[in-house]
Length: 188
Image (cartoon, rainbow, N blue to C red; front, side):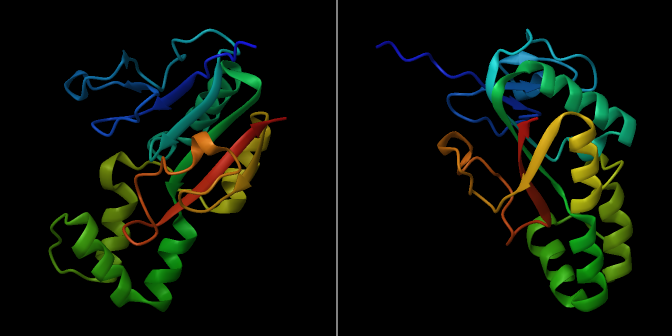
């Protein structure tokens, strides 16, 4: 029997492309396979993708824009398709600020590296909320509500872990270098 080739789309790839995936980005300098504005309609036909991946993009959109983006992903995914979403975790950020500011400072210094005026935990939270185009940061509850509203069943997963082989080891940001939520979102 001839097995169908799986279509996998990496949304917001930047310079970090996934091999075997269709890499999509708005920046022509990153040389994506498909040049597209992800805040607009996705340039793919309905129900064509088996897997989609997006890391640190949804947080660059206002909440309504994020809903539009997720609805577009839902449209493009096959009925049994899965969307992998990574996004900064505002709850973890705030918990580190309150309970472990030194680790927050070390994480910023060693893995973000953006210069700070004073280097305080409060400065990190403020800069971090706006860093790299962040517009809306999520906690588990908020992302879960948004994903369900857009036709997905979000399952919280761990770094490089998934029940789907295609979604394992695709995450760029690890718990040691970032404060992220990891989700596999199946169509309802």
